[in-house]
Image (tube, rainbow, N blue to C red; front, side, top):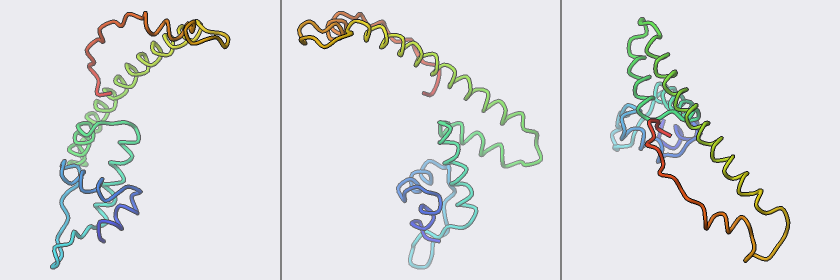
Length: 142
């Protein structure tokens, strides 16, 4: 199948397919005599796998790790569990950051409960006066 058909079946764009090829997530296709890419069922399966991983917000590195583990189907799933456990930690860290962000926004929103002139707006005053702390270095991919 050609790249457009593959992209349509995997519900993505041709540019996405080319990008995944370039990054090594998708193996290179065979070339036809006219130099068009020719994809097979294994490309579609791999592309769907990648898209499912991306839907779970996994990084390309995490997907590479999973794909490399899949090379030996007889090995146990300990490595897969490690990748997923690390990803869950990344998600937990991001959730904590978002909870803190929501608390800050809620606090800011409490500064203004009614319609008033902008020069007296508690939200705008709060934003202007707010001291931003240095962002801690992230140890996650998000």
